[in-house]
Image 1 (cartoon, rainbow, N blue to C red):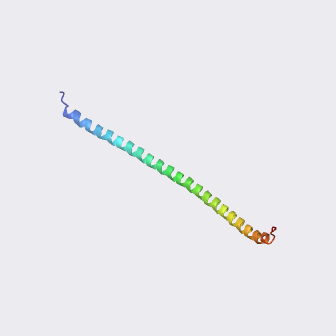
Image 2: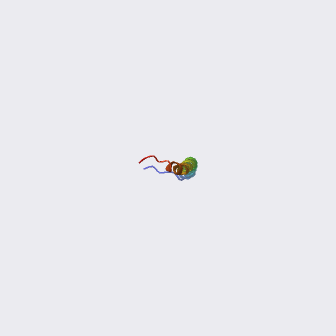
Image 3: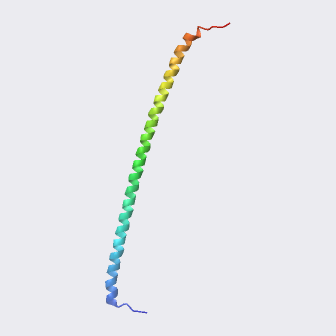
Length: 88
């Protein structure tokens, strides 16, 4: 078993601390970037979903309006046609 001399041990320890600190900095930077990108993706996704829902609401409202106008016009025509029955 080899012995580490005290002077070698003392110089190695700060280098290990620097390396650990550098690794921690890189890991933190990576995690921050990942978090930021996930937020951007989520925000973009939510925005697109909102646009689709708005379009759907508009189409449904337009369809409902057309449907109600069709019913109204049908009701207006039926009494006029009701009096002109041909039959027995």
